[in-house]
Image (tube, rainbow over all chains, first blue to last red; front, side, top):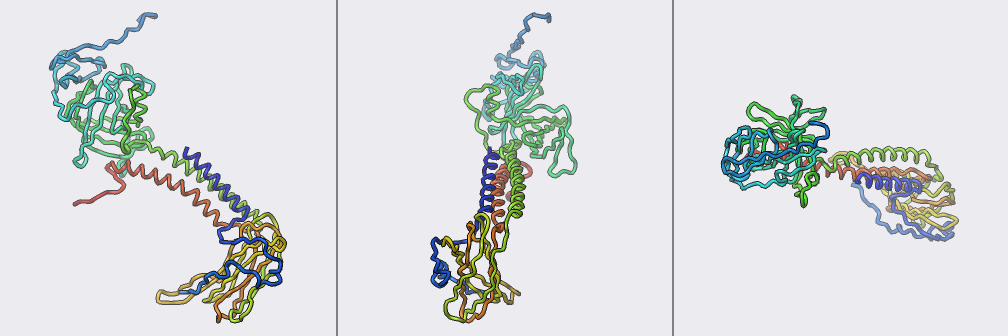
Length: 61
Length: 436
């Protein structure tokens, strides 16, 4: 019984792994934006990234 | 006996106790050596025609009622047996008495067999006809019998505390024997030493439910308490099966890794060399040339290689599809610091960064890049490289962890069961307390 459940679970894990690899999933935080105007190409400064006000590292030891 | 004549039905022999006059029933014919009167508890010599009283014992701890009444018949391993005797035996461990019950079973053709019961755990016991081989130098001690190795569990002096019915030996209340158990679940080998005489027997674990079914007993068997010395672990077979399945999945995982590695395009679709002067004010953002991303929806891996040295740079990236306006917006901080202090040399971060952009459909893309850095840093040179359809090994690690987790949990539970088993032995896994 436990073995059957594990085989089903393992098969699901392998299927998920296959889909992740094929579709190119990533663990990175990426924000998807729709309908970016074509004018950005001519005026890059007109685009406002959601990450532009991100806190930046100022560190070192 | 002539052919066709009806078989003679065996009759029980009717006798009376010389102590109290109560009627006695002998079930094992001439095989009984001692009989216990269930009225006055006199132990009688069954071999003596006058039934000489060998011992009278007082029921000091109260009469023990057998769970399987004497005279009950049942089928054990396909053979009919009758319960003819019952005894309680007790051992002392650290001053604490532990008692179990033994039932003497008899079949006129097969002889004697025994059932033992402790806290709802049952064993089907038969006397060995050959001696087990004692393995020298084994620690803890081990014996081998019919190719199977048994590990020493416990040695204790067992005293007979209560008897009832018939016995094929000279039973006495108060007699004692040194009992040593060796286990290999679901079996146990026991040696009983009285003086110079050693008797070996083998027990096989039975559930109370099986015993109840075999003897067609009313109600249900008492629930077993704790883990018994030769109780088979319900998880050991499952644990083995899970690890076998895990091995199979591991093979599939490696095959997938090789397969996806071979099939991946891993194709460089863009590279550009740039510089950023943080001392300069004004708009720092720019866009790259358009590049073609081919193949099915997959990832894009973007690598930023810099010449940073005790500095940082932050890059706002937007991967924009020129035709659809779909964009993947993300920021990457690249920092690399190093130095030397009282602990020696140290370093932190890296001058290079890599990120995988997920599920990018094929199309024509460009990057919008906006670098940021602390004013005063001056010039930073960096290269941006974009690759299509790059295998992500982190997912294999996650899948491996997901497959391992249930196997480890089950193994842990199985080990806990063994821990409970051996905690009751002469060889506990962890010795609690100490000499005080």
